[in-house]
Length: 150
Image (cartoon, rainbow, N blue to C red; front, side, top):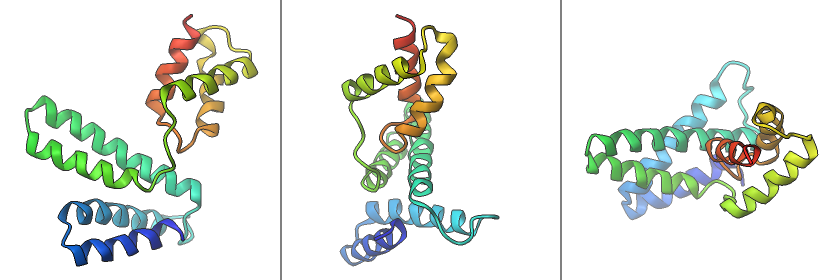
């Protein structure tokens, strides 16, 4: 079952259960899918990797908003963002923990022959392709920077 079908099935279940939190998150995913499918050049369909990118983008947007709401002491809005993040994350592949990520990145650094922070671009290009959907770019970037600075 592709992402859109899964979201629609979950949306129906959330409506029947009158789950406001779930509905909010699922409707956001549905809207993003529709926009992506009708975008110029999309051809009316999304590939698996495009679906993952779309979900990661939605989570990033919500995390950015969450940070702003916390700075402004808006706990009510921050809670809504956290709830939506939890709903959206259910559709992503399982995320790697820091130790697993560090181990994979160490291998990629050895593969690319990177030795200093100046080689970060080489490592990031390979890492973002290989780890698509399994970790966010911000975390990957921070770990690569840390590993290359040693």
